[in-house]
Image (cartoon, rainbow, N blue to C red; front, side):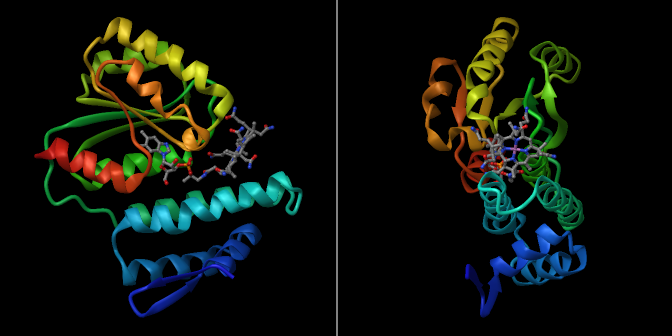
Length: 219
Ligand code: B12
């Protein structure tokens, strides 16, 4: 049993994962609402509930403990819950900064991308979330029209790391100075130093570090 303790309440993550796989929106929603009541900081719920539960779903899928359909159900239920959590996000003041967030071409994992967008939004940034599978050409064109202060790229598949590097090379050819942050599950097993190959590029390991990065940018 995986129990999360928060305030004086305990949350059984195993039960939540079970409801997620069954696509039981009502039970999941009740879990999420109780968690948010105890701690309204979305970063915490993303890092302690949404991410680990989907990683667990991925492991169960990989080891054939659950079907592809149940994995899809868990994913779509999580997307529904993200939309719900999004409603609790309020930024008191706009900071006058813009960020473009995207998953590179061939990447169709988009939940992490949406979450990163929420983190910027709650900190008062104007946020352009392009979603997954965006080509370098399209990212470059979009940057031209929006002139953002920062570009955030997400990568889930380890095998796509060379494509991320190629994308960053192409972006740097056109925009030598725009700061770029990279993150996502692909870096869990290494290659975090990829960012060091590029000027003003940074690897950010999790949302707690992202919040600190954003705070520093806001000062
Ligand atoms: C849902 C899912 C899918 C869905 C995606 C649907 C969607 N709408 O996004 C579908 C079914 C489409 C899918 C497809 C595939 N998937 Co998939 N998928 C998953 C699963 C179960 C969950 C992903 C997820 O949403 N995680 C939760 C989010 C919140 O976590 P996250 O993305 O890591 O993001 C967090 C952080 O990393 C960070 N973050 C993310 N990006 C960024 C960016 C920045 C700048 C920063 C600062 C932070 C940051 O913030 C987030 C909050 O904590 C994972 C399991 C897992 N362990 O992740 C497998 C997983 C990622 N998939 C995997 C695979 C193999 C595939 C497929 C190749 C399967 C296939 N044979 O077709 C395809 C590939 C498709 C493609 N070309 O991209 C493997 C990858 C293994 C590897 N070698 O890298 C995993 C790990 C499953 C497994 N255990 O094998 N998948």
